[in-house]
Length: 293
Image (tube, rainbow, N blue to C red; front, top):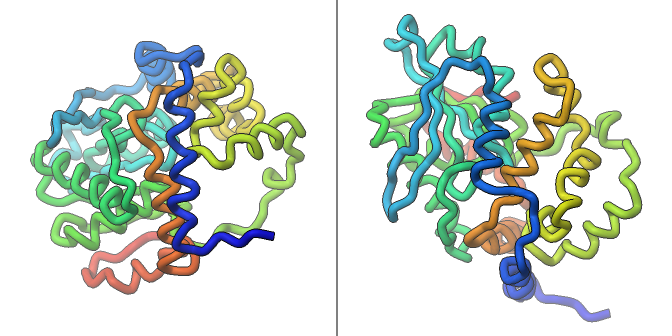
């Protein structure tokens, strides 16, 4: 059996990551369809929306759910997870906006925000995210904020707070990257169809969203089959496939470059021995603290 040295792992994987970006796009999606899907997710919500310009000509899609009665409170900024977007906060917005201004943004490279080239260096790519959030804050004129991050958003919220602690009053982390996984649930025991396992094995060398794009018209069905839990979570709002359609259009958009994901993960493995980023918490020195959900 041939063994690959740790230092060669990133380069081996990243050489494969570019291939899907050269294949013809045959996905039933478009920017207009993504906008329509997001509108359905946020129907009956009272918000303003705008593209916030940052450096490099990039734009961050932003929703503002602030009410006049809560304008004097520290704003809460919602940062979605990997493959997510602002629409996935739909069930939380009404309650949260009663107490303080609420802002939700699509991270750089996701949703309706710009999709620029990212560095293949893990640290540089992470810094691109952090700086985009800081530039967004400055453009929005927010002196300080409470960050609520889910999944990748939790990881980046902590990373941002380490670099800009004076801008963060508190952090709320929801199932963030960098912490031990929760115990297995009943949902995790649900059998995965053989055809999906085969697709997963076929596309495993590529970037994480390549499989969804390469299966083309089967993409919406793939999302519905792999993640039926989304339909259950939003059953109080939708009885159809509104949520899975939104998730599909979020992630089937043509990427400029997502090869850095492989580099990020593998470099983390090589440097730290695992993807556990709990060491971050020991570097946070401000008094406001963290709420972990």
